[in-house]
Length: 196
Image 1 (cartoon, helix red, strand yellow):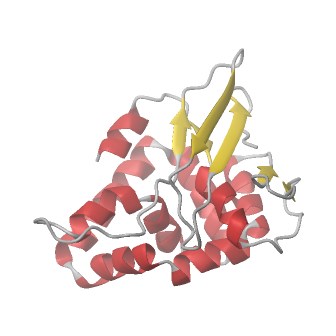
Image 2 (tube, one colour):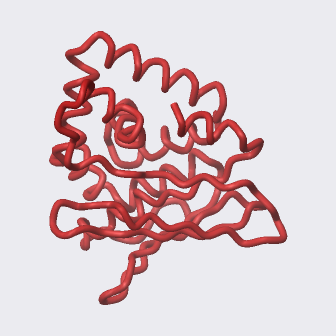
């Protein structure tokens, strides 16, 4: 897929967890805690996460901090439900998901460790977290041949090349929480692998 090809260009991927930050908009009660992390929310501002550690620790902190929002997206989002049904009940959907999973694991083991941490911290199945992060790749396959597009597909993750001298920033303004939309912003440094 285009996302896997684009990610393959990065030799040491810094994963900005824009979706997880955007999910904070639907979980205002998320509490600070986890592996050295916290959630900061100001009125009329984007929520922010600040976490650090190994990829698995970073993911676990995201999962713990955003468990309610992640559960909402996994279990209530119509786009996610369509993707899950496509993968579960369609041989080509299952094959596409398996291929995306294998390619991501081979090319981006750190990212997969982080997503495994998200699954662990949030109490969700790893496959659900992966499908949530692969909606743009799986969604068009779920509605082939000019069928109606899935209304709730999300762009989830931005990837940047690390450069210790230059702070990185990304934005994801095309998220939609089903209640009027939500955006996200993430920033980090290429030398630490942390995102905020």
